[in-house]
Length: 224
Image 1 (tube, rainbow, N blue to C red):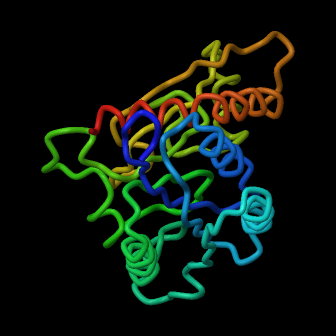
Image 2 (image 1 turned 60 degrees about the vertical axis):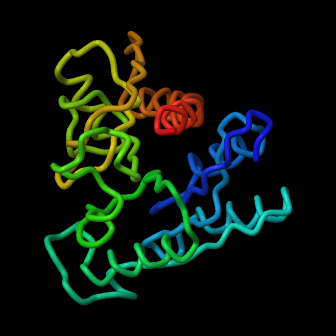
């Protein structure tokens, strides 16, 4: 139990790349900013940088965060459209999460569309009466719906091209379609006069690392 009397929520992270946001979130959890503990990191790329980051954090804090590579290569049956999980991949991820008893799944830079068992068990469903019934959350580097389906600098390119005036770090529950789940939090990032897609994306990433643990903690409080 934490000092606040709330039991810590076990969290599983899905990632695809370097894992800088995952690392920042784990640091925040160790600092007590969020009343949760990461126990599992799954990446669909075997050489994803997040694995080396987690190994370093395990050593730094004396943690035992498990890392697993699950992808359409390791689990190929039930392939869907390009960029989607295979059904076997989805089931394997779901089983790994359930094996560890994790109460929340965070998609932090995870580049695949979620489907199958994972979506049905942890995602937002039409039958849900509350946003807090979903147990899977995604971060998105732009305002929604304006940058729906885009990622990284591509979301910022649309922001600059349309003259929107701001980008955003958005947190939403995972639903069947890309970036379609109800929004939990949005933090706007103003466009500066000399911003490029790359510089704007850096600002959005900084905002994400700053607010993500706070937003997740608030979500967990409301869920209780």
